[in-house]
Image (tube, rainbow, N blue to C red; front, side, top):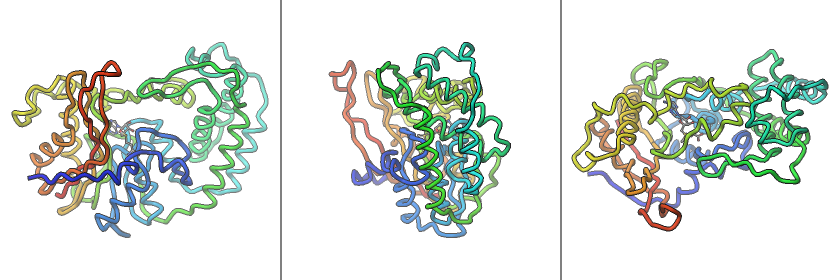
Length: 377
Ligand SMILES: C[S@@+](CC[C@H](N)C(=O)[O-])C[C@H]1O[C@@H](n2cnc3c(N)ncnc32)[C@H](O)[C@@H]1O
């Protein structure tokens, strides 16, 4: 039997919102992430301490590794997107304050001519011309920074400041562009962003722990040996929900000048080859093909979590149910079936959020839950 409890008190912790005011965590707003509070809560609950290692195989912008560094716990993070991995790296690194100040004044004193004619049409639409001009000018200066760590820091500042100086906003799973009369000047947004980031570095010292962040695939944790990990705190992409590659297209274009750097095929749920081998209990037999592919991928990731966890190691996996026009697919329940099939001995479901799901805005499909699945190897 799987224990299912309501923990709506943790609902806000399962969102990115509380990170908005926290030093370093606030450098990049990542709506799909969870908060530092959740990581802190699970670490206490699992009685993880110094000398232990916590893994997040879907680390996003690095909330789990950064929290571990704050608390003095060793940590490993894996993320398929080079953009998110870069932001995570920026947030978790140590810096020399004088060097940060030096590089920042080099960037801000940059002058020169920029040719906007070769820019991607989406960027041309997303920013007032003078702001795009300044963004590209600063980007050129950032590209020339010799140390990767400082480049990551200022690229993160660039995308974060650009977000406040354009017409684009993220509306659910798509980017909308709504030209407005008044948009703040990019240069001023950049100056303020950098100032906040430097003061965060000064005010939030991180502990000296072992940490490694990888650009990689949660379904193949080749960088880790068996039983090296004490706990997993993570959240995979949700079924049928977010297309990260289109939602963050502007950020990709700003940093890489291209979206093709993204290894799209390794995003979970986007490969359709393994659905034939996914065995699930009868009640889930009629899942749509996209959902079968998603759970086949998820199973590979959970198999890897099982392999790298030590005996008695714990996992906390935040997952939302899948909303389809005709039904809600209970991803949390299916995840528990998958985990038990792999060998996890204990499983619990904590329901942390409930939302009414509708189609065509008014027709109710059902109540979609977001849960934390708690496992013990
Ligand atoms: C729900 S988000 C996790 C957010 C993270 N916990 C945070 O707070 O920032 C899921 C992440 O998984 C990443 N992802 C998708 N497929 C992946 C794969 N095969 N291997 C590793 N990461 C993957 C996505 O790019 C996204 O950043």
